[in-house]
Length: 290
Image (cartoon, rainbow, N blue to C red; front, side):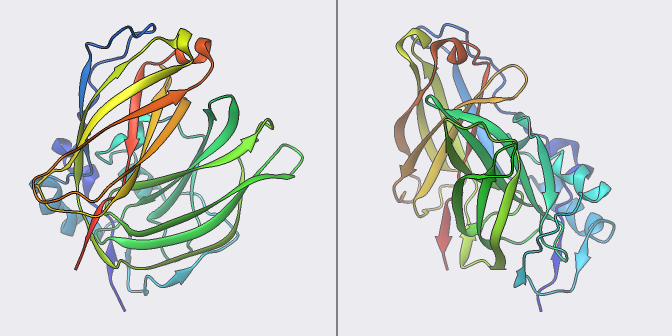
C-alpha cells in the first residue's frame, strides 16, 4: 500500500506561478517579447509545508492502483484550494469544469475546456496530479455534442505525471462544436515508472495573424540540468480571459545533462481569432528512468 498526500502549495505564497509576465501584442510583428516559464518547480517553502498540510487535506492509505468511477465527483473544497494555487501554467487557462474521477484519489483532477486547432473544434482535457508522489495515469475519453453524440476521442498515457504537474490532450471534434462533456471509457492510476523532471522554457512569440499562424520559438531544459526522456510539449495560445484559441504540439527529443532543446511550434488559426492572443500556456511531462 502506498500513502499519498496532497501538495501543500496553498500554504506557501512563494509557490505561486510567476512566469508569463508580459503579454503578446494583438498583431505580433517580429516579436520582441521574451518569456520565461517555470513549470512545477516546487520551492523549499512548498516542500516544508507539504507534510503539515497533507494531514488536513487528503491522506489516503489506499493503493494508487485504483480504477476510475463513471460518476465524476465535485472537488473537495480544500483540494480545489490546492488546485487554484499550483505553480504551473494550469491556472492561466480558463477551465470550463474540473472534477475527480477516482473515488479514493480526489487529488487526481480532470479539467476540460473547449479550444481551437486550426479551423477545427477541439476539447482540451487535462489531468493534474495534486499528490506528493508522481503517478502513472492512463485513460480513454470521448467528447460529446449537445445531443450526447460522440464526436471525438483521445487516449491519455502518462507513465510519470509529476507531483503538481498537468498532462493535456486535445480531442479533435472536427466541425462539430463540443458541449464541454467527456465520457470516460477507461481510466487507471499506478505507481510511476520513473521520476518526473521539473522543466523550464524561455520563449518568444512572433508572426502576423494575417498569415494564419503565430510562431512560438522556445528553449526547453530541465530546471536542475537533469538528463531526461522526450516529452510532448503542448503550446496553448490564450485570449485575455484565458480561453484557448489555438493549440500546437511538438515532440521534444531526449535531453542530455545540462542541455537545452530549441524548437519552434507554429500555431495555426483564423486571423481574427489569432489576433486576440494575450498569453501562452505550456504543458509537458519529461522524466528520467530509475
